[in-house]
Image (cartoon, rainbow, N blue to C red; front, side, top):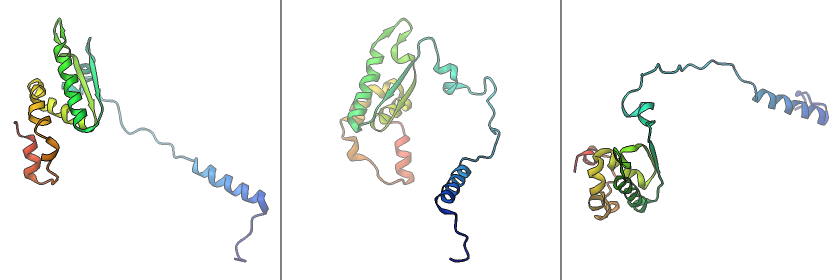
Length: 149
């Protein structure tokens, strides 16, 4: 311990702490490596223009298990039941954001469309869906989920 120089009191300690803190704020300048995509590079449903029509609806659904899944189904059915000059409000849905239980409904709608939403109660909610969940990730259980009903 005698070989290590001792800082000069409190003033030396404060200076040392200030140097350490200032060093933590240092950064290395770097230019961004990503470049914007050229116009028209994204097509299909992910294209920005596809989500911003004259009448666009963005639906955000919360979680909460099967109750949230049932509520999400009710929201989508209610949108389908409201007529517009060009169809119904479900036609104007551009984006669906969901978490937890409502993601089940959103995924079912994404896979099976309108008919899937109409059948969702009988096929998923009433049979006690949670009791039939597969907890293993074997090839058979993963592919069975994606097969049409």
